[in-house]
Image (cartoon, rainbow, N blue to C red; front, side):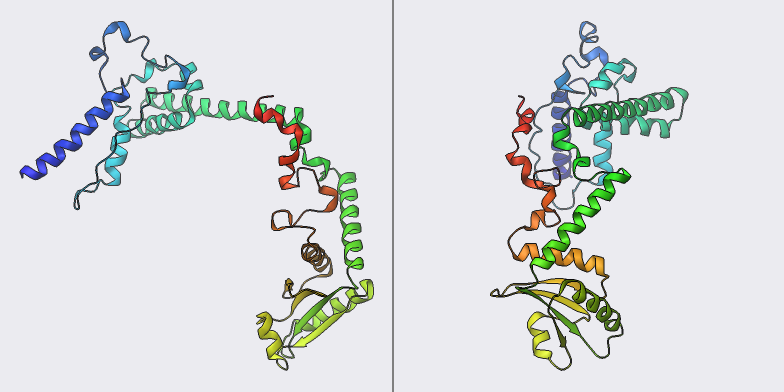
Amino acid sequence: MTTNFSQKHCRFGRSIVLLFVLGFVCLPPCALGEDKQETRFYETQKEGWFWYHDPLPLQEEEPGHERSQVQEVQQQENRYRGTDLGKVSLEALWTMYPDDFQELLDHVQNLAVQTPTEENTLRYLIMQDVARRKALAYTNSAMYVTQKYGNLFNVNQVYPTSKPGVTARVQMQNQEIGQTIRSARNDHALIYFTSPTCGFCEKQSGILTYFVEKYGWTIKPVDIGQQPGVAARFGIETTPTLLLIKKGMEDYMSVSVGVVALTELERKLYRAVRYLQGETRDDNFLMYDFQKGSAFDATSILNNESTQPWQGK
């Protein structure tokens, strides 16, 4: 009995110290003096809902005395119990740090659910309205900043959404894809893994026939039943499968697994060719040439002098 009491006493003592550090949260107004009651709420913006100090180091709980989730919630609730919420002004809610606001909102919501009086419900709905207005204020600010610094964030520059812009973008993409595939046909080839029992390979073969007629590529068919060693070398277990290889390179790249339409085959092959040629990396794999230096060029921001506003310039 003595050991258990000592452990509980220690935990209770830590709680008292922590609450003392946090300030007015759980103490009645009379304990702080009437002359300080009007100034103890949000004297400065950065202090938030309570004076913040690094929490005291917690001692490890001995086996059998772990704190339950219910106890954790109760401790969080105790932070606000005894606080006169009526003295918290709308200005204080507006400037409150978001994490503190969320905790207080959860507490007010619990009060409204537990005791759904007019006062509790109204207070919760007012806080919800404050949260909505803060989100609206951020949205307005974000729209202003993205319009002012359009060169940094405006993706419409290379990815327009208007109908004429979409038509132009598709034409540019198709032109770049076609040129890349045609220029790579002399030093690249496709390995086409197939099987006599593959019901999908017939459809894929018809698509590849049209592809060869359009681009003049070399496609090497491999029957995985008759050439199991080749299939094992590349780890092929599914047909149809297309692999891209380049002359003079041991590296190869998968283009598709399963039946793939011509347009999708062209896009995948275009990206694979550019990757094997060293024109792209994994972090800009989807980027087209005409998108270099734009918002679709992920790392271009590192070399963009117009990002100086981040440094307060």
